Image (cartoon, rainbow, N blue to C red; front, side, top):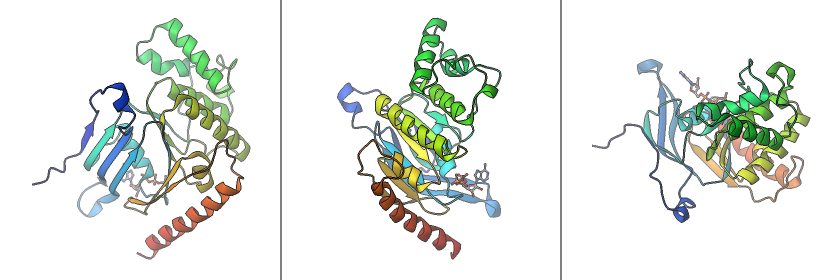
Length: 269
Ligand SMILES: Nc1ncnc2c1ncn2[C@@H]1O[C@H](COP(=O)(O)OP(=O)(O)OP(=O)(O)O)[C@@H](O)[C@H]1O
């Protein structure tokens, strides 16, 4: 009989050359059902997906197709019902639409928090926090409290805090959805720069097709619930990109048409 129990595995350490070929995230036949019996909701219906080390993958799909559930499972916050989840390295870093900063701490103390939990000595974590704040263009703002920061600045601090974890995988759940278009545009550029420098694998969930294409090396479209991989596209466009690029526009139109099909297929199912 097949063992369908969910398994969350941390791969064994490998030699340096080998690390380049092993996926940062590997999902096999991933399924998630919430509830039981008549109330059961199948959120994810069998996802197979590999994310390479340093790869930037955007995930799109209709509302309720299981995108957030997928990230929660990869983050280890939610158990899978069945399937295999392998994540390289330590706990992945997470970033949400809401910055989820600690309001009683300053920006710098927020960035220091994961290092404090990790036992990094005070002078070292302070220096690293300053460096990360500079990376997200907030040098000099480290002493400000959360309520003194704009929405865009809060997301920058959240990004710096995620980077402070030194994770090999960064999971982002619509991190810029609540921001105005101009701020979002700036943060797209900054995220791309940070990703190019740090080269962690990124799984970026969004509803915004142009954003997915603007940022990703690959776009994965999930089917309507239960979520499965409906299609993937390689984004063969050079950086730096901007959201108005014609290449971004052309591919976004193609993906939007496929997304529409997916939504209407579900509506008529
Ligand atoms: N804790 C839970 N208990 C029961 N059902 C849940 C739970 N979490 C999510 N669901 C259901 O699972 C399905 C997938 O939810 P999920 O939030 O992952 O979708 P999503 O694609 O992220 O949606 P959106 O794009 O609207 O944010 C939905 O039908 C949702 O109602």
